[in-house]
Image 1 (cartoon, rainbow, N blue to C red):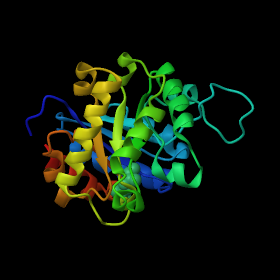
Image 2 (cartoon, rainbow, N blue to C red; image 1 turned 90 degrees about the vertical axis):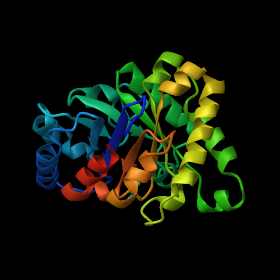
Image 3 (spheres, rainbow, N blue to C red; image 1 turned 60 degrees about the vertical axis):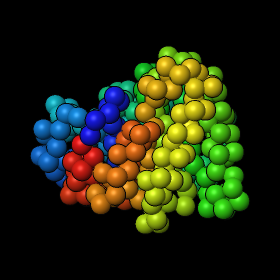
Image 4 (cartoon, rainbow, N blue to C red; image 1 turned 180 degrees about the horizontal axis):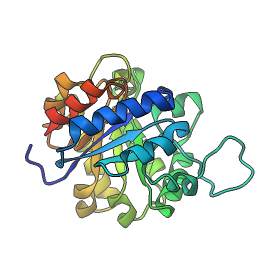
Length: 254
Ligand code: 13P
């Protein structure tokens, strides 16, 4: 696939896989994807597996991501994990503001932006998630919602940091439902996001930001989705839990 920008495909394991199961998965991915240079490949296991998975992928092209982090650097925040702690395991990416955290942990745009700033301070690239619910889409509010999430979640980010930030467009109605946005629906929102980033930062920055699509990405729809002008990668949930499906998504995207 001929693009100016390198695709980034990340597997969000969510709350799945024991350490042993995670190791099986990445060992298989290492075998399957050893020769892939065209795509940045990222796996995001639960915190409990970061240490072991980090060692397993050390000398491979697979990079490590986390699924969340605290906005604080250290201190009395029971149950939280700071960016500096993730750094110990060579975590390079962190998913922030996933719709499941917005929904179940009531994370706000303001909190997501604080976390994104803290991630950059530790040289971890945030993957900032935005996306509308079915209700919002049907009411014709997709752009309004996505714009509000972008402005709020990226507040305080410098242009330089923005170039090292990934935006993931994940329509909530497509997550775990088997309903994928059509390539045209995805492209329409991705183009809108890039236009907004142009206003918020600059055209140069907007062109360099990678915008992932997430929501029921599978081997069968990856090629067409990645073929869209403004789709620069994928954030994969369910299909990232198996060697075959995740490696096929990557191979089909090249
Ligand atoms: P599914 O691929 O399971 O729809 O999940 C998408 C997602 O939420 C990735 O972060």
